[in-house]
Image (tube, rainbow, N blue to C red; front, side, top):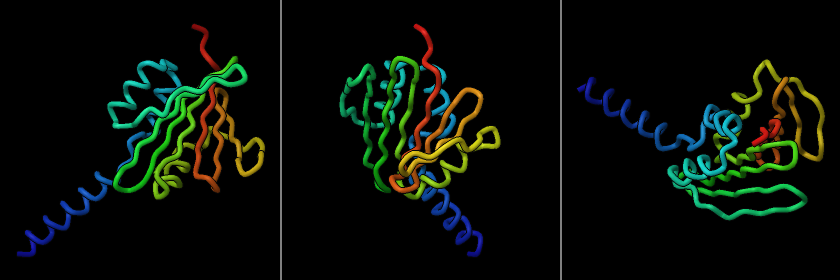
Length: 146
């Protein structure tokens, strides 16, 4: 009986973690930043059941927006590029925000500056913006020439 109880408890805990998992992992964000392939990223997001909110062009930059409403909350993603930078703007579900933040700001990043509610950290090839008020994590890399 004890073994059955432990097995059921383990399965419930594991299924809870699987259901509560975020759609976009840190490694997936790094893959998006490396490829900078809007068509492939859009396809991947749609495969993850994100809904396209459209494309917006403003001041020589373009942003594609996506949203997913899951059983544990809302995730939003913006994929954008301008004249010099490619970006991924990610708003994870609230309970996942702090763990994602901790994972992304590794020892390779150094605090650089603040603007409004965002703190920016930089490495040799990337800038990450963290906004604890809105729960948004922004990633910026140099735009690859096509």
